[in-house]
Length: 457
Ligand SMILES: [Zn+2]
Image 1 (cartoon, rainbow, N blue to C red):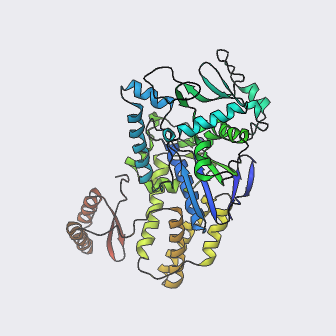
Image 2: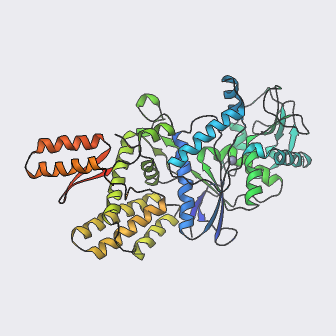
């Protein structure tokens, strides 16, 4: 069974689902006001790998991830660009799913939208008011964090130390700087708004996920995840509302790490690095980003830049090649290799050692095949490819069917080489490369396969 680092406990513990054989997961999704960035891509990939691995282990997974389609940032953009908030949200939700589809991130089982849950959110705020855990001010309704005994659990800090570090907001009627907004009263008639007992307005972000997670997954659901930037205050505040209502919330909390530019510096355009996830996907192979994410621990910071991406693309080509080399071979993966894979993954989703194992299996498979040991080679290759499948890596096997012109060039190149005309052979290689083919010299002559879609030219 998977053991996972629980942010609330600060240590690695067994997942222990509430119902044996089933895992319910909630991952905070995007606020759709802009193009997705590299960090979004990383956390989406991490939770996709987690979901796929749990399923690979034989568990039934219910995966819920929301779309925040009403928010200050959406409204600001809509006003700036003279269009409706709905229009902005639709555009960037589409961009979000296009990027995630390209990355091979499976769609959630449910993707609840905030605007479809406003009535339930108003009910929840009303209940908190009744219990005296929330209070009204001139601009909205706030949650009083001092009402929750263990507030600070996810921040791994006491309420006192959080209070002393918080900014003092003198202009507000808030009782504590840490108190957070549950309901925002509308300031203008032309901003999106819904009716409530406290006047027309819109719900606060932290209320959204509590309502949706409890509605779709029920109390005491198994796992709540997101990027580490959401642990505090977002998850702390989600949890505080559930605690105040006496409703068991997430059993486990897990968070993935930041994305940094090359050399560990903050991402920056001036370094020639990717400006958005969309930009990265236009310039590189989407599967290479998945591999790069797999090669580091999900909680560690991840450095992303063109050099790292190119290295990942080359590593993938080695796997592609193995898939092509063993296509049609009937071999099953060795049990020992898959057990080793599972033992790495079960220890806090150890994708880095599991990926190293996959490449080691690949090298050993090739060595065995080179030596003519098809049985051993086939079994090692099957294990490497089974692991890549469990990771959700799309390999390019079968992607090398040549059109007539390419087949003619390949044949021409082989005869040029046979007659020692290397200049001609190189010219043809360049022509094939310009047409999007990767060209390899093998003992059997020229072999070509397609560059992966979108990969660097
Ligand atoms: Zn959330």
